[in-house]
Length: 325
Length: 282
Image 1 (cartoon, rainbow over the protein chains, first blue to last red):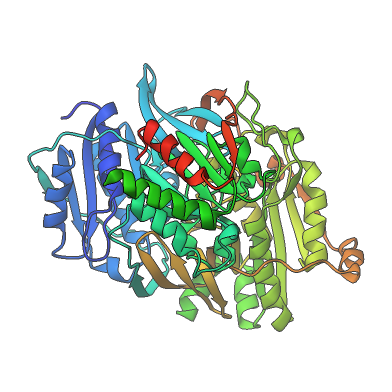
Image 2: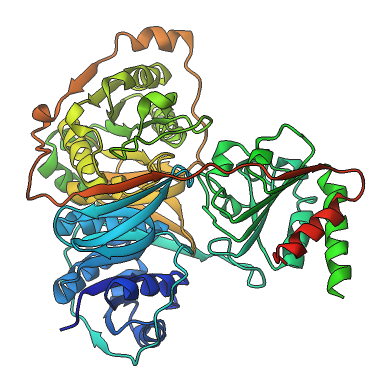
């Protein structure tokens, strides 16, 4: 038996691709114990995913192939995780704090009678067990949580864990799961999200350039993308820009969108309402450009420019390019 | 499908068969009162529990959208009951009255001092008990609260109640015997469908809540308002065998301070390029 096993649920897309969150989850697990990964796929897709997961540091990989996965929402995953939990007897169960990961963690924690902590940004151990660290109220407070008894179920913020586990030789076991027949919702259609492969993901990006209402229109929002591409940064937006229809909701940084902690965050035409600051104020360096000298974003900016984004940003881009040359 | 959902419902809350056969619909909307995100929010540094006195409290905006969804259905289906359920200190009554003024039929308010600092598991247990007691065909919640930012209580309730869930919906259609919606995840957009009784959670893509009119405000005063304690629900808080998540440390992060601010006089873009290069940020 392994020492201090940690069970990691690895998300896969419907075509069996391992989610990007897997590397951070396995990195976090390796720091507090020996990572065992669980992969649940449609029939025929688990082998490739299993070797990818071993490469990311899983010492043991449990696979479940379930035909129900394509049309039955969440229930097959809960059944598989419950079976893997009995098999592994881990000290903690780690999942991504994604839309699916939260639902699965919630249902599994209730079914197994375990305590749940969400949106951890770090994991550690003290003499009594696993401790989850959280950054709450938009990074204004650091809170550590632990469990009164039993294994700890923890969802981990995407992009928060920098640690990576060493690659392992694949040790793969297929797991048999008895379906629970819990009433479940049916999936009737799926449209995959087309992601922009040339730009980094907002979650976990080292640099982020975000635009707000000050960009004035969807057409003019291109300026944000130009600066982002010149810096190799991800593109974000304030809720005002999303509500105004400049960019899709997946760009939204803030309380009700994505929380980011990049090395560099550049806010263009963003006033800096608390909802927005809550999603970015843990960035190492914050730069803000805004016409309004009283904009609250300047209270937290390391470098602020009171000026017009449409003249300052093009000058910044050409200045950076001329010095690169 | 219809028979199955009716039978599933019958085991948990006897009223459901009657309701579904008669075309009635009982929708429970879960409302949470949260600190206003427009102001500073504080945590108590000894307990790690939200300091409710430090900021204005109001109903979470996404939960109001859940309420709007229920009331919109009720607008076109007159035999619909919209029961608002909350777990909050007694002071939340003001927000709950507003929900009645907007169009809720009744309120079930679980208020108990022993619930201060309840974790998600206990919260789901209490709300499930309250919802089961009230009876339901459809439960609607906001997807994620703006304070705890957990987003797990709805799914925990669905597991406890043994019903299907369709969470994180950005578009919803409610039918007499099932509910359909578009579920947005990091990988794509799923179309999901669940037979009633079921639980859904909705995102801020749904329409904003309407305003309460004068008539609604007056009518709210006469609507049923039930206050419940943990004893009424038979929920035991200090069960030593129950696994709970607890706060073991809390610290306030030092506030950020403003750095250099320049007013653009034609060279600010170049000055910013200097700053980024000097700090090795490009």
